[in-house]
Image (cartoon, rainbow, N blue to C red; front, side):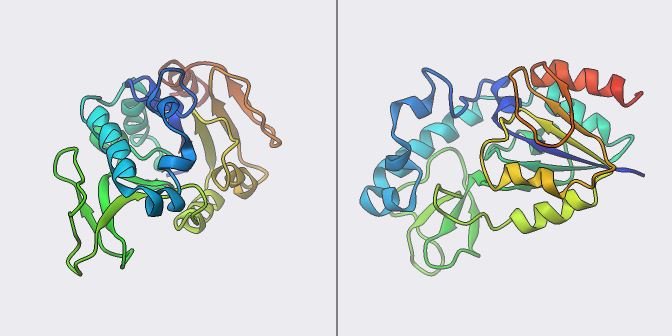
Length: 225
């Protein structure tokens, strides 16, 4: 079975009602990135950071996977599908996809501030000041903040190198290191980019200029499914 690797970004979750990074009127617009999504922000005002992610988590629990998520599950009938996602939501999991690698963390999990290997599921939407790990340290959102290393990028590169088909859905390919995954696609393998906007790709790619759910239906046609 051929391996199909998919890199997903905010555009696939936007159709489920999740605010994207650049949305006007979205959650991000109410905050400066420096105040809620950096290690410095956590040191300066951890309660504000917790509240920001609590609101994002609350929003996520009200959202559901959309058609694009379910079409990716359908692809598993024909390919060995591996999803590498820049998204911190769990919509791929809730749709039923089997192989998912999160690059930027997971919103519904918390992490120890003294031992990064201690990761816990969050019951509900709230992570509070005073919630501690088994070593007695405050829990933080299990999110890769701006300025932090991306632990799963090596694994993502290894998965990408083995792809027979590489598909990009709903990402501008401007955020690194995720955007750099294109260089790990073997030169004789096809690349498909699904996004309604112009996406710069220095690698030759077939650009399907549609939103995620419509674009993935066209991908099925390209793949002869």
